Image (cartoon, rainbow, N blue to C red; front, side, top):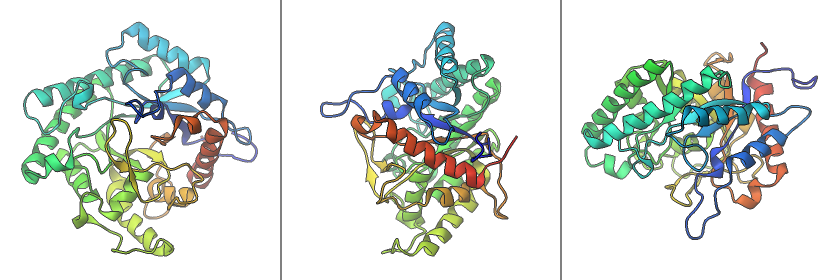
Amino acid sequence: MSPTHTHNFPKLHNAAWPGVVGKGGEDGDPSIDLDVMLDLTAAAAVDGVKFDGFDLFLFAPHVDIDSTDDQIKELADKASRRGLTIGSVVAPVWPPTGGGSAMDEGEGRKKFLEQVKKGCRIARKLRELGVRPYGVVRFDSACSPEAWSADPEGNQKKIAETFKQAAAIAKDHGEKLAAEGEICWGGMHSWRKMLDLLERVDEPGVVGFQADMAHTLLYTLGENAPEDRILPEGYDWKDKHVLDEALKTLTDALRPWTLDFHVAQNDASVFGSGSHDHTGRHCLANDPDGKLDIPHHAGFWLRDQTGRPTRAFKHICWDGCMFPNEVMMKPQTWNDILAAMIQVRDAHGWTE
């Protein structure tokens, strides 16, 4: 907290996974080491305010999903030495990372649930070590909209059943699961389908939604699900009122389920690199082509229908996947991002 910025909640986190996601491949940038990502996070400062922590991808080369207790302790020490906490963690549930599709009732489901269990184990251990006071375990359906569309009703039921079984695992570990709302995941690729899935699972407070401002903007455009588009065809981005009304429709539906929140910017286009499928493009916080007024539109998620802060989560995280390494290695990049995060907390936060 500083004299200029009086709120100390929600805590402000950076994400470590931009150092891994979308990296690699013949023409791609190499991964950025976890220690480098944490050093960049810890060094950022604006008006005396620093990042409080970071969120984490439980995937090599950053973190081995099969980490031993000693390796998890080493991870906790990395955070503590830098004065950072750990928040939400991402379980690698996808087939290429050892998981399986949530639509697969056989071996795929078994592998999917095993990855959720491993993720929950690491998350719980970090809590017990005292470096993770809040956060969720993030997951998704690990299947494509194209595969899902072969049998929408049947596949939605299968995903819901997998998520129900995942909920039981989370409860056993004292954890919560947040399904990432992103247009590249089958059964979750529109706001209506995401809401339908959460209602089928029916585990409020255990299985919820992770809202990312970049991804959810594409929900309003009906990317991968034109039937669920909210913004009109040919929408003029200069008409801010229409965008606000669309986001109100979206957030009123999904806010009650939201357990985790990513501050992000988007230019209303899709992008992918490395092994990551096309999804909402993450732009820098100050990108002139960004369509979101970050502090204003963050409030649609962070405040309820009456305008009061929901205080639904203790931390918020910046997500900016697939930026070039050249950009990510510049300290000013992270100062600009932190400044945007501070604006969000100044507008919608609270003091404890």
